[in-house]
Length: 126
Image 1 (cartoon, rainbow, N blue to C red):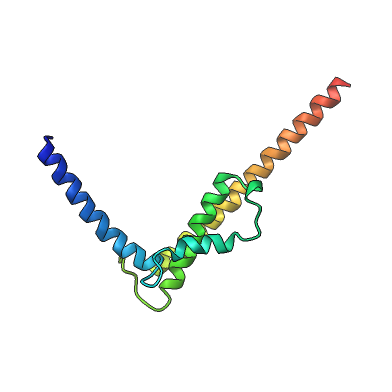
Image 2: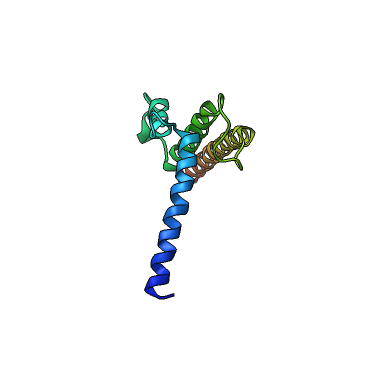
């Protein structure tokens, strides 16, 4: 790949990226506020002490808030991204909820196991 081919590739990638973000922003945010889906996350997390959450929990909540916003935007219009139906978004939302639930269960189980090992270690020291 020479420089001319490289620049043409970047130019084409930018055009593809622009088309995609134009459609997805319509589905996830909207014309009035292109940041609407991101602001929803901030609203959902008001009152939550983020210092008590780990980054995986926060990341999953971001994904859930994106899907909730997309569902709301698609209630009265067809999706701009035709390969992602309203039903797909509902299923995505359910799947991310299950992932978050499984993650928190695993985290709780690991914490219990760690606490149990600490107790056993202290008991054997006495």
